[in-house]
Length: 171
Image (cartoon, rainbow, N blue to C red; front, side):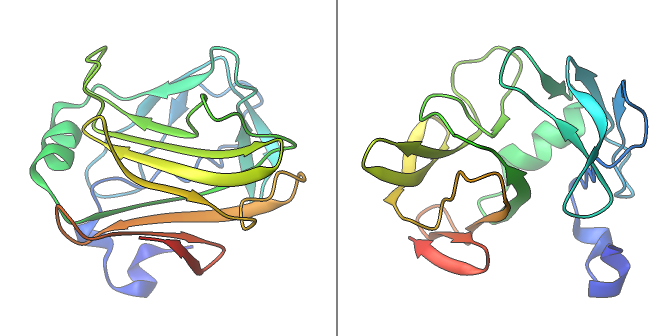
């Protein structure tokens, strides 16, 4: 689980493992060299995760808040970036983001990722600067309680790709 093993540790804007062992974590520690720790609100910790422990976000007022100016500057200045995470849920709602990166309460959100399952369709939506860049219906988004790996890659302002469990599901 070391970024050094893939040789890109110094290139990370942030790396939040979210595997702290406390049942009531107060800080999501940034394992990158940047130290962009976040404040945990309402989530519980020390749950069994895909790798080590995990946080439990139940969708009701729980989040990690990171108001580090350096992180926002890094996200705003890059058109080439990757956001990835493991998630497990018995259901996803199309209106509840799994990952939201925003500048305070600014409605022009920098990045939103919604895995969803609704009657008759599963899929994922990704927004950058409040503009939809991917909206894919795919059976790859499984809401069955198993862990899934989501990875969004932005190669440029117009070249984006979404992977679910290592398989490209949309561009």
